[in-house]
Amino acid sequence: MFKRLKEKWKISWTSFVLVFCTFAIGGSSCGYLGRKILSLTGLELGGLYYTLYIILICLLWPLCVIVVSIPMGQFGFFRNYLRKMSQTIFGLSSKPPKAQNGSFSIKQRNLAIFASGAGSNAQKILEHFKGHPSIRVSLIVCNKPGAGVLQIAADNNVPVLMIEKKDFEQGNLYVKELAKYDIGFIVLAGFLWKMPEAFLNAYPRHIINIHPALLPKYGGKGMYGSRVHEAVIAAGEKESGITIHYVNAHYDEGEHLFQASCPVDATDTPDTLAAKVHALEHAHFGAVVEDVIEGRL
Ligand code: GAR
Image (cartoon, rainbow, N blue to C red; front, side, top):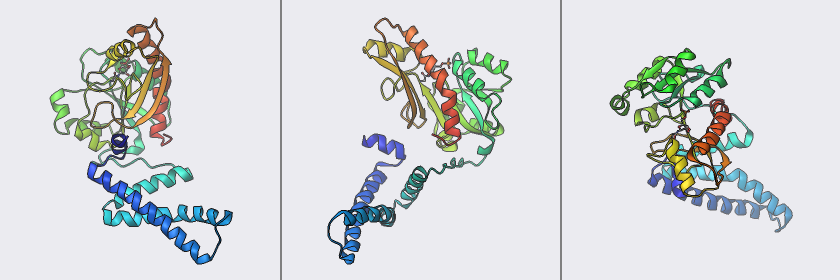
């Protein structure tokens, strides 16, 4: 649980401990202050007292944690945390973070799809955004000559960038290539290489992946395509499905955005299960990508 929270917050273990201490000290000092203030009013314990106490706690808590976060060196974390919390409570839409290299415009909402397989998901995403007023698929990135997705790119007049593993893993050559197309968002649709640091830094929370199982089960290095379905059936699972998630430095471990499930029947083979999972992917991926870009997810 702690590991997941740390991943979600994207902080080191030291910061994680300091953040927890801030929550604990900020929370208890807020309770203490609330009681002190109420004692000045001379109110007896009862309905009114507890109602006022809850209101006071809600008002004092952000103030207390932000004050405690300063000596703890966690001001930046709590400023963002409270901003997000207020956006959730008051329903304000969150602005997408600016890319750190500043070389692309988020406003353009140009997508790059990274794919190295048949490309059925790429096809569905292209269909989903056809005629969209502001979002469009501007580039297909592929590492496999002859992959089905290349024909799909050609049929849809989408430019293709073929990439080499060595250049992909080292430096930011391809980050610069993507900037030429003004790419603001990356979708991995059947792309199996781990995203290198250069991309993660240039596209913070702007890279999402689809995985053909209900993560955290059946994910990680080497778990892709039919291998996943074979493992699910071999384990006797009663259900499988899809997970759409942000990409981080570890295979299939980024924050989850969406999951959908389907039953695994006794008669299922890896192929029949793959068909069910593909149907889920095709039904949901485009809409989830759009929700993320529009700040609805
Ligand atoms: C999809 O099922 C996707 O979930 C999977 O590759 C397939 C690509 O199909 N991705 C992974 O396994 C990543 N670990 P497609 O080429 O027909 O879209």
